[in-house]
Structures are given as C-alpha cells and as structure tokens.
Image 1 (cartoon, rainbow, N blue to C red):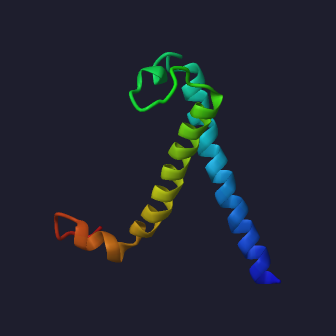
Image 2: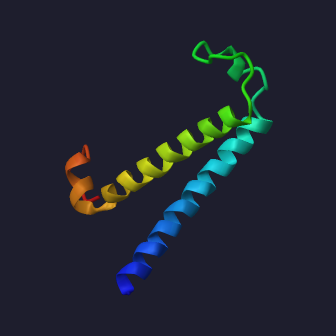
Length: 91
C-alpha cells in the first residue's frame, strides 16, 4: 500500500510539474509571439497554425524541460560535481 501511495504521489508531482511548465509556454506562444510567426516555418503542411499546433509545441517544451530537470537532478551531488570542476578546490 505504501508503494502505491508513493508511486501515485510521484506521478502526480511529475504531471503537475509538466503542467506548470506547459501552461506558461502556451501562454507565451499565444500572447508574446506574433500570430504569423509559426506560419512562416517551412515544415508546416498548412499555412495556418491553430491551437493544436501551439499545444504541440508547448507539450514538447514541457517534455524537454521536465526530462532535462530530472536528468540534471542527479548532478547536484558532490561526487559528481568534483570531477567536472576545473579547479581542484572544494565544491
């Protein structure tokens, strides 16, 4: 039972982090960038970029951000940082 509770809490935390990264990315796409910016990309099959295209980009940004953060979380230990340091001083 404890394993299930821990698993579900971690899963919900990751989903929450995913949403917390995707929501600002989508907001920036909607309000900051010009509406015709995405339509100039040569890889689009149609000229108009709809909300589905913007949502795909926000999900991609969120996936990359969450994955990068999870992978970089293990780099905070001293045993990992010490060999990567340029100087031989304490990290």
